[in-house]
Image 1: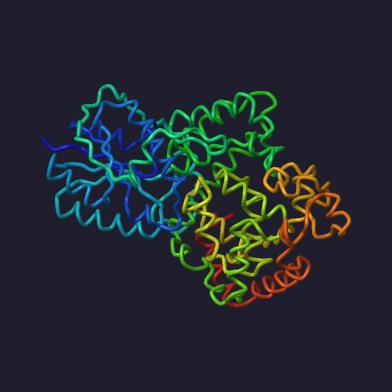
Image 2: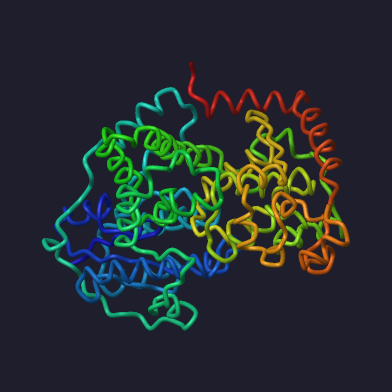
Length: 484
């Protein structure tokens, strides 16, 4: 008898999973399949931290299923599906649509050709409220609400006739991600159980101060939901999270935080929808009028980029943010925006030089959100507010006691606030007093902040007025913004 295959990608859970429910209702034996695809393992957007998180998620799934019901492959999707067709026969293939990078889109086109050739019925379920091929937003908000408030696509796992496929011998490159890991005090652990523990903790006490802690790089670590990696890898669905908000909506003292939280859940789908409708932004500015925007090149560009990646720019809030990301995979939204702004505005580098690096260090890397947000903060959309963040001001306002900077830049531990946010102002005597030699223990600034700000502001506002930019801005507004 042929089987139904549920192809897992960025939907690593067993609840509110429409493809799994459809497979269970197919009347055929069901096999879950996950592929550690070489095209993704070798992709520069990804890092070992992502595959560890995936491995933890798969182990969580496996713990709730009979042995062999989850088939893990180290081959590409096409090779894996063909092997299963030969050994078991595949009648139906079920999966979520993937709003991913171009390489996964090309892979999906090849899988569709294979399905057509092999008479395999492939049913894809939309992700969240994202509509494939959407060209306008006229009814999108109503659609979002309808999807988020719909019943969950749950099924009784005990009633499914599971296939027990023989385990594949995995290469060490992949096997390492499935081995039990020593829990890190910094990295969040993957899996559906961890996702719900995190979300429940948010409602128990952490989240009440959410609205007041968003912009603080220190407070956000505790009071933000911390659900983003679980959404990115599908340990929990956006609908599940949104419905928890509705359940807590009338709890006294929570309204302001829940309004702020729910708005960000709405933005989640909004930005992924932008990427779905305009996926070329992986390679070029979404506003083509910025294709020729002047940028620094050559050795100077490489030196600046290296300093930015390593957290050695000489600007404490920038460097602390980057080092925090490298060590934890997490950073609040305000500091992420500052990192992109600093790269593109103060360092005058092309946004494409930094987009893959931040993808690698963000544990919650989600292609649609990442590219949409990156270009918005880089100022190359022509429709969003231009924001040039001053890292010194951000430090003084969002880290007034210097806790965040001193945590990630211990070489500045003895420097008092507010000087810790501008250590280049320390006199030689003060540097001796506070045990830091600027230029040796901690880098001197790699750009003049006032000069870089003035140059970026003049360039961006001049460019925004160009006819090509304005024509593209009109096109983007028509496509991505709901009409009044």
